[in-house]
Image (tube, rainbow, N blue to C red; front, side, top):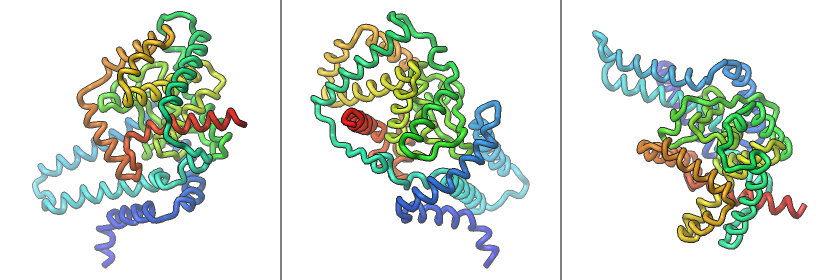
Length: 354
């Protein structure tokens, strides 16, 4: 009896975690996991992997490679396990990883959304409102851009990456404090090798097994502060992409630092323009033509950069990301990123009234 339990322990653990994730009430998860146990996990990660002088993500990948190599070499042993036992071993390992995923971070997928906790009553954005928001955001972006560098020349990368990790951490912590979320943590934000993520059409990733926010070094410089703040939001236990986009935007625009403010408004504008393009491609061409010359030059530079860092394998990344988000209860999948514009607009409107 006990031998069978020992053999099936990780399968049972994974099944138990999935049941808790699926059936525990969101307020319970929010209070006892997201604002409770997860904070202990956060401290553990910050005080172990957080002190490494290189991305801990590489250690995790190395661990997976060693496991795969070990399984492959096993086939060349004189008396390997029977095929069914080998398959069960792999399945058991996958269940162990799933169990650790939920314990270390995954239960946050059942926490109360930022939208509900901040009472941001979002609603579909009309065409008129969308156009007005594009106009005001591009104007704000122009003002910030001219303060950083009043010419159409490319802005030096150092403007955006100088002390970026500390600045991003301070910005996201201040935002969480403002919204009454736990914020006392020393989360790490690292940059991995260029195109390591972009090869799969992913700009950044939070790795629960090492508690680290990672951004691809191939991301365009002016987008990096927003991307890093987004991944750091994941580090603090927020899972919905729209929530992390929203928190990253607020963190950037309220940081008091021009490069971060530019990055926040830039990424917001890009989401607004993408929404317009999906509705009316002709109107999109007209609106982008009417943008300030200096902003159009920046957007063109970003477009050319993205062409160099876009790969056919990105389709695979999109499919995997869609399946991953859908499996964890994010109903609109990768479209969830786009909901950020509704959250930002509602927050700005409420801020104006107050």
